[in-house]
Image (cartoon, rainbow, N blue to C red; front, side, top):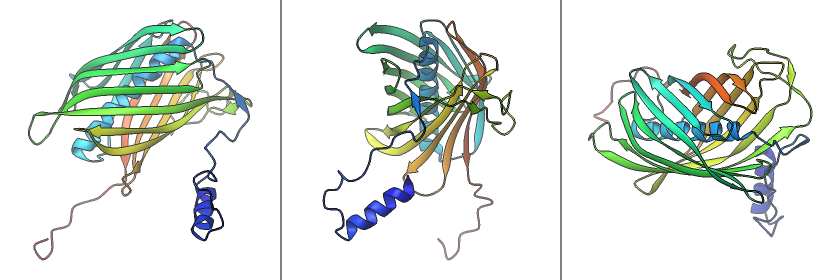
Length: 278
């Protein structure tokens, strides 16, 4: 996709294309598939995971991209309501997911609230509202929260917005290893992928944009798994990835998975002494 877009933009710069952006194709899954028809339990769990990742994004805004990992677990019931908790005890962030309503012609919407401590970052007033359409091919979420400054100790106001697509692949796919994290590696399974963009703002000014790609599979003949990768694509520079890896049970009755949410980056190494007073 990147190569194709680069070629299109190069041709555009020479006048070969006269109708940009209309000539630039929209992203779409390359593999055959269908609407994923997520269970409400999965929808609620994914809302909680999105908000957890947004909190981690605010930590990255405050401290920079520092490699670190936190335990994470998510539990939702048949209607999508439930809880999530992440962090290193006793400093934890607790989230509550509530199913708020549905319409047969539109979809379902949820509310995520909570707060707590994440490795010295105090997070309060979390309020996320978002929906899935019928068939669960589209998810959107808007969240607001406050996170303390590590420098001043006072709260900064954050906002995050997410828009993503979901797609159930027609062909069974082998369960990935996830660096040895997942069970039943290599077993063909029905897998849902999702992809899309999100952004985070601090004090009403945009700070970063992330691209997400993920794969999830249910507890049915294999143990369930959830693997998300959120890659910071702007501002350009040092690679920064938020990775979620969870495993456990996932069926129509509930979503119960445990694992980690981690920040991964290039190791900057030991800082060199400044030269010439720089």
